[in-house]
Image (tube, rainbow, N blue to C red):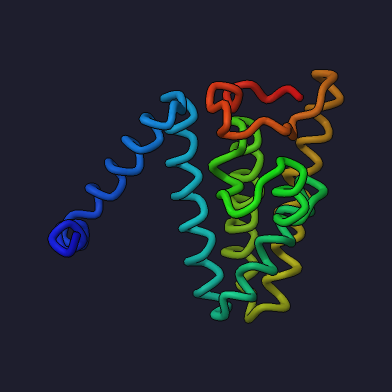
Length: 168
C-alpha cells in the first residue's frame, strides 16, 4: 500500500484510473463515470476559489456546500441524503446524471461569481454560494416545468443503471 501511495504522488492519474475502474466494477455506466469525473474537477475548482477567498475551516466548506445544495435542490446535503435513504454513502456517488449536472452548474456558477466578485472570507463567500445555487435551482425548476417531471430522484447506486435515468 505504501508503494501504491508513493506512485500516486508522482503520478496522480493512477488515482483517477483506479476510481474509474472502481466505478466500472460497481456497475456505473461510462456516461455516468465521465460526468462524475467532471464533477470532481468542478468541485476542486470551487474549493480552490474558496481557499483563495479566505475560507479555511472544514466546517465553513460544509456550510457553503449546504448553502449551494439547498439553493439548487431545496435540500441541505443531510436532507438530500435522507431523501435518497443514504447513511454514510457519498451523495454525489448516488446522484443521477442530471443531478450531477445541476450540482456542477451550481458549483461552477458559484466559482465564476466568486472570481468576478472577489469575496473576502466566509460571510461574503456564503452570499455568493447561495447565488450560485439559486441560479441552478431556477434552471432546474424551469426545466422540470418544461419536461413535466422532477429531476431530483430517489435513485441510488444500489442500482447504478438507474442513475442514468433522471426521472423519479
